[in-house]
Amino acid sequence: MDIKDLIHLGDDSEQEYVEPDYKISEDGKSITIDAVNEAIDPVQDFIRDKLTGYGCEKKVLGQIRLAVEEIFINIISYAYRPEIGKAEIFCEVEEEPMCVTIQFMDSGKPFDPLAKEEADTSGAMFLERPGGFGIHLVKNTMDDVEYEYKDGKNILIIKKNLK
Image 1 (cartoon, rainbow, N blue to C red):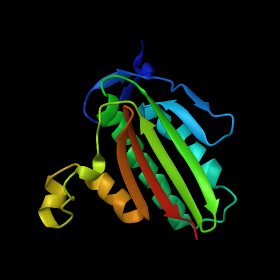
Image 2 (cartoon, rainbow, N blue to C red):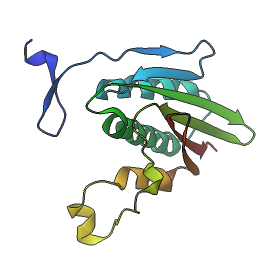
Image 3 (spheres, rainbow, N blue to C red):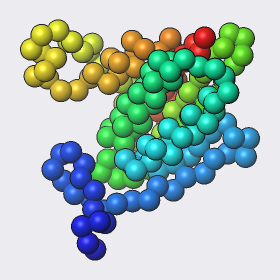
Image 4 (cartoon, one colour):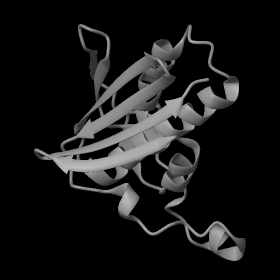
């Protein structure tokens, strides 16, 4: 293995690059994918493709993109690591009212990100205490965020009005 086969994870550890395995459902409403860092782009592409053509504002699309990334990174970091498991992401757009619902499911360790203490975004604490800011961002940019653990699965649902 040469250096091109390694990735840097930000925590000073190196792991072998893993090409994510994924499958889009026959109805096109969901993607099942390995919960690895390399899968973020295919997940984002899947969501973007579902939203194309609905005339969403760039700001709304940016908020959705950031929320999807934060949630998917939480699945990688908390549900499975150091193992690799699967995540299933459903994406559906409703036209009345115009909104998107994105559901994330994984069979990893139970983890309710909504149960975490609210992030302190003021002053020095914001800079000194890492963690919690991603879900804070999700909760403050999405119109609805719900979590449940059911039938051995973490299920996180976000909703965002598109108009």
